[in-house]
Length: 119
Image (cartoon, rainbow, N blue to C red):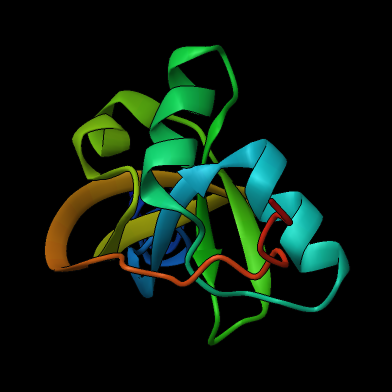
């Protein structure tokens, strides 16, 4: 019986192992809108910070997996909104992560894709 319990505990730890994701921290509105058009790139950091302040969810945009991940514990990424990061996380559902560790990579400086306003 003890061996079975030990096996269950060990296998659950293996299944819950952290994975590494690299991507941009953004708000759900901008990220999902861009992803629906096939763009998994950085969003405007000032806009993302404002949207998060106004109540939008914090997400991770992963160009590598072409995914936008909802974050189970978003406060860990709050200071990184607009930045590119490496996160160590475990999947807690389809396109959902629980982040254990965050490593800053670079600041975002994307160009706005909207056409300039006419004067």
